[in-house]
Image (cartoon, rainbow, N blue to C red; front, side):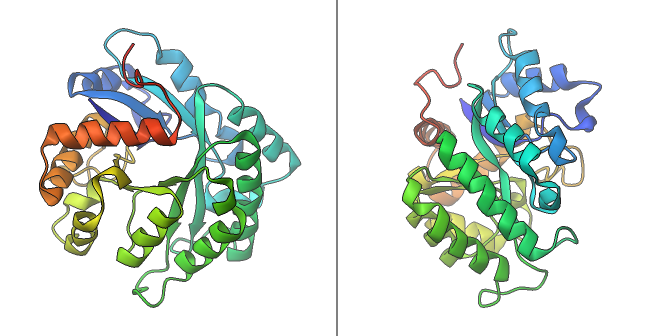
Length: 280
């Protein structure tokens, strides 16, 4: 059994076939999916929970969990009402994580100081609810190993506002170098890889993945984006997480079954779930 640790199941791109898409994932061996609750705006962060409640308990479908959080680009929308909504969502049993939250200096969006302040406020809410976090971090285009402003700012914030919680989290769709991966592990984070790991030009990322411990990784789709090769550019879906898992298995010289078992174990440990995480 595999777990897709990050998929935007509430996307409008699944509006016509969401149930069939989830059935395909189950048939492919995906036992659970973490549905990401960020919506198109902050007010839509409850949509992933609604998807979970619509489909959980139906036969031949993965078990669904949800997250809730305000995406970096939308942090200018944060006010007391948004934070109260986030706090309430993190109290729901299906909502096992806060995210995806973090910093994005690549796209035009909220100003960087606003992103940093918004991240800190969400960390406070997540800590209060004892929920791990899902981190999005993307530096500006062309930033090299010695010029990763977003990463530097992120680690400064996590060291000052998160490490002491001991709650850890996930570095979602990891795209950093070895130094960022090492620091993530040191903070108690799991490093999660998406379909871009399979792209021809992603050898530097594969080199990082090959150095990571088996119990320090997760696998995801970030669906509907980042479909793995050979379907890059098409709509992604949780069933395709098997391709990224297969690539990871090759990099770490283990079997596909070992990748599935170890990432499932790590997911369960991080989110404090039972042994039946993907079983009904």
